[in-house]
Image 1: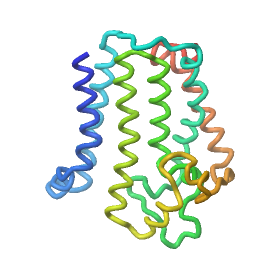
Image 2: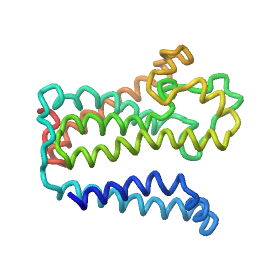
Image 3: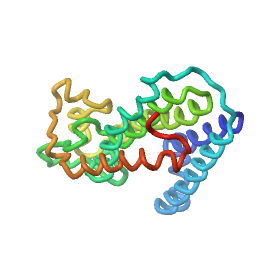
Image 4: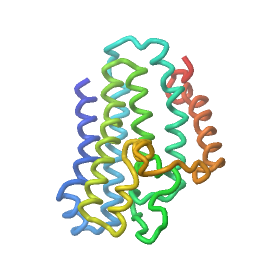
Length: 226
């Protein structure tokens, strides 16, 4: 279990500590932006591999006994997580790496970004949170909890960095969107336009959801449907 805790700290430290510390600027100045991204990707991949290995090797220590509702929670929540994931990969987002707000755009946010300006982070957060609740053991809470913390803290860190840099159009984009899904819509700072997400993305999300259910026992040894 100690190895899992250390792996989780290393995983969070590399993903949250390096990009938000002076070390990033020093590395970029020394080796360049492209080389930094390659180096960071290798370190992040190694951290992920260590975390997965440590989780699988950790002993089972129950914390609570998930009932039928908790065990089926991933089945209910994952379709929305899959939709967020697909949209994050296929739609423009000013918070994504290498992208920025368009100060001349009539609509500062479109598609899934009307719901949350961090769709990828919330896809990971939903996936992690429901698996923490559905598993109910110490090792899984550390493993999935690391991803949950990374997603929530990462979204806040992105907002903080962009607010500090203040690229053109960021202030308007920030005001018209929300980190928490649907908050801007409920506060009437934004509106839902399902057509901007589109049927093809919904179908792709459904296909991903079905594929995950089918692959789950083959990849993880546990059926996705209890």
